[in-house]
Length: 151
Image 1 (cartoon, helix red, strand yellow):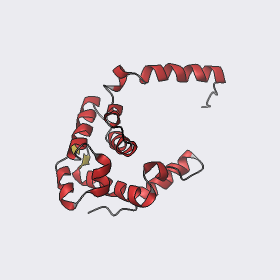
Image 2: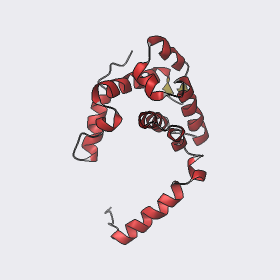
Image 3: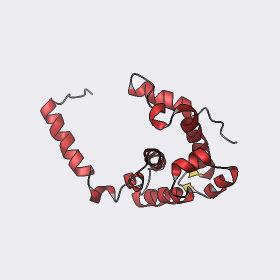
């Protein structure tokens, strides 16, 4: 199976059409991408988007509801929560679940993100390493998994 390369004009038309289809209020309000749209601070947007994408499987309404619940548990300030949480703060994540993603997973993600923000300059910086997409994703995965996961 070979991939067909689109001519530049055809590719531009394809991208413009999909931009118009997906970058509008009616699409966004019913899609998990609505979650990071609740924030204006870059780091809050990144973290909200990361969590929304992490749990983005299943029913969109459920994904949005659970992602917003998670943001409420973080006091609507995901960056502040991730970078400054205490052990007691993490208890707010108890009983969080979206399908197979549970509170233990969520706490691990918060701790891994804390390391990424405090030691590596944030998500943008963590994704900046690598010459190709595959290498970039691999490098991010390695960085993310450096945090110990509770048994």
